[in-house]
Amino acid sequence: MKLLAITSCPNGIAHTYMAAEKLAKAAEKMGHEIKVETQGSIGVENELTPEDIQSADGVIIAADKQVDKSRFYGKRVLEASVTDGIRKPEELIAKFERNEVPVYGKPQSDTLKTIEEVKTERKQKQSPIYRNLMNGVSYMIPFVVIGGLLIALSLAIGGEPTDKGLVIPKGSIWNDILNVGAASFTFMVPILSGFIAMSIADRPGLAPGMIGGYIAANGSFYGSEAGAGFIGGIIAGFLAGYIAKWIKSIPVPKIVQPIMPILVIPLFSSILVAVIFIFILGQPIAGIMEWLTSWLNSMQGASKVILAMILGAMIAFDMGGPVNKVAFLFGSAMIAEGNVHIMGAIAVAICIPPLGLGLATLLNKSKFTEEEREAGKAALAMGLVGITEGAIPFAARDPLRVIPSIMIGSMVGSVIAMLSGVTDHVPHGGPIVAVFQAVEHVPMFFVSIIIGMVVTALLVNAIKKPV
Amino acid sequence: MKLTELMTMELIELQLKGETKDEIMEEMATMIDRSGALYDKEAYKQSLYHREMEGSTGIGFGIAIPHGKSHAVKQTCVAFGVKRSGVDWDSLDGEKAQLIFMIAVPEEQASNEHLKILQFLSRKLMDDEFREHLLQAKTKEEIMQLFEQV
Image (cartoon, rainbow over all chains, first blue to last red; front, side, top):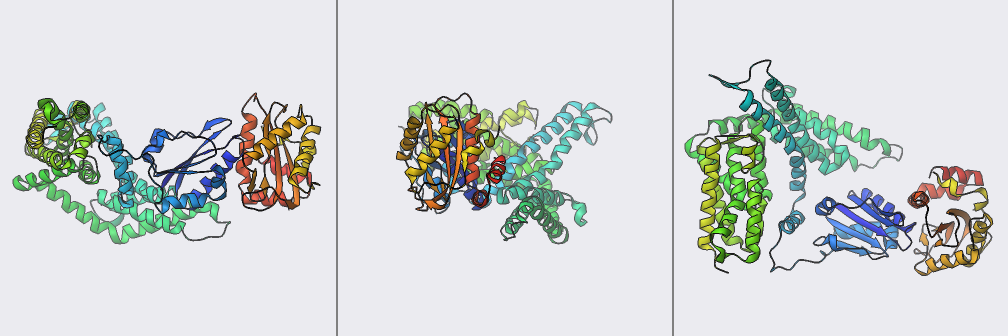
């Protein structure tokens, strides 16, 4: 768990810091992350940022003074005295483990839920495996963005058409840019598995995860021509994380403790992960990846349409939730495997839900409340920059009518994109990726988006009841 | 800046004579007064009791940290006393206090540095080993050495 705490006492000289220290120690002992803001006579230190609060699972307020709670709206908040923080920090933390802490100021259900609220609710329901995976993915994405963009740019500007496709002449500056992009790609799998492992086992998991990921990505370790790719990376990350967590849980004498996180855990976890990958898992996973990529590349006609429909439906289904992220992760991973068509279809599907619903609010005002019409403008802006979450406020209010409409719109859009050869070299969607030169067949890219938008808007207005 | 700059040898007492909380409050406030850190000892003591009213400073683990912030204080200082047999401090865990830190802080702080040191001391006191070492120290020099770490 990721916890936050605030400690404060009347004088702000001693108790505040004692409670902070005890809470931090107890959390560490119980295997949780914690950040403690102290409100003492020196003023506020180690202040909690909105990002901290956003990503936290709960907040402990150990204070004998009034503390402003408004910033924790919608979070689990446990209030206790500062002495409880000193005397029984374990008990306070255990209340979060047992899920006994109520959410502060639960929002009323009849107002339009904001995107943030829905996201927070989702986060509370997330399984740990999904959270670990997404931690890895979020660190990996920038590497794919940099790699994809630089490679696409260097080919688009510096490439010369030959009979073997676009080729960048040797000695051109674009060749260097291409190589920088390729360098960024080589980090992709190690970063993915490293941060999955870190999410499971904290810092001692990072090194074994990255090393495991590197081995997974390089087939030469286990005598295979192709690497085990992102699937191998995910498996390596979880393997490294759980092995490190397991070693961490073995009781050791006090003298050895300081070297556990920097030496013993990383070393033995890395060796174990390496052995497992080199001798057991590497080859079969590489085989699966090879089969998958060649199957995707050889896909024609009907099967291409079906894949695009599935991906489009997944992207729209939960608008940035787990199903959406699985499709998105698949598309991003395929960029690094050299197949940019899949991300092309996804990039179109990503922006259709917010753009389509935004358009719907403009076309027929009677079907939407004042509040929704405002949300519609925001949705249009978010759609342009490829944020599917812009559709959430509409879907949260009327899921049975809105979700099918956006799913169908996204499916139509991604099928058209897939059939017309639209590609996307970066793991992101919406018109903005065309601005960055990451898309091929730009006119068809926009045609797909517009058709998907119109389908969504007409459909939702047809089935929605007037307000 | 270090904790030892807020303390002198005369602010350490390895064998407190007082038997009750009130006696020890008086004994240690006198130590601080004698070091010249106070304008007015009685006013300072009032601030100590005022703080105790808001909740005992006997935080458990055998520690009490009576502290007062007052205009009667000239400069920040810390006195440290040991009462091996323990003294009842209305502690939260019901245990007697053996290590007593009395802290004096002026109402208006010239800088935050002193407060920083007290913060480090507070955090350090949560360390079981550190407390054990303090209890075992035989001389004032040993105590000073331990405080050097803060």
